[in-house]
Image 1 (spheres, rainbow, N blue to C red):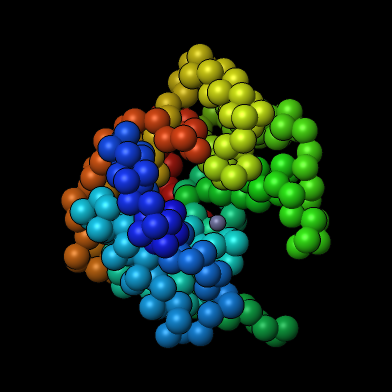
Image 2: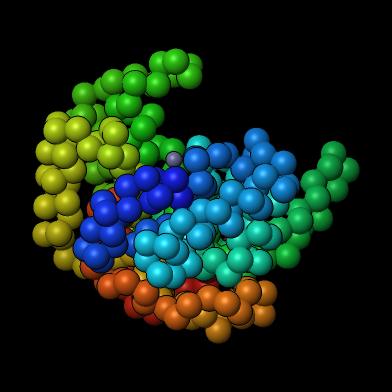
Length: 256
Ligand SMILES: [Zn+2]
């Protein structure tokens, strides 16, 4: 959630938080970091943290770059500010991982950087409702597809994840100004009702999914900033309105 939204509509955001939903950082005025200077990016990150903290009483655990456009500074800033996860990079569809910082790739060689302490949670344009049903023709693409189109994309994406033998995480992105219209709400309800009926499917916030997979704050303490609040800040096992996570305990290494 952009911090500006929290500042403009505090009562609404309080109700969302009181409903057990996780509220994560999404810029202050939805500024894509890739289009900001270093000082501007830092300023809006801090401003957004403070805006969300005024509502929830705690620093946010998670971050998603507005327009999915992080900068090459973003992960370091998230580490410094004690974030648990990012969800902007899209390198894996169904598994969390630790993205690298400082890769140097030239025509002659590749030098891999270090793994970040930040957990990268799955996300993708292809399961973001915006490109499917929002009217974004002014920005060169998309349009207003029938909402059933989104439902088909989400279902097939989920079904592939469900076929996998290991635990998988499926993260859908639904905007209130897209899926939040009446016809979109109807398809979202149909999808969620269906997923609830499937064996082994659990709805989790991102931090709860991370813990379910075996992650702990101690694992990231070597790089992360120590001023995090405790885990499980807000009813982490309750359903989120835009995330469906499937998890089995135990497991695989998250590193790439
Ligand atoms: Zn956004």
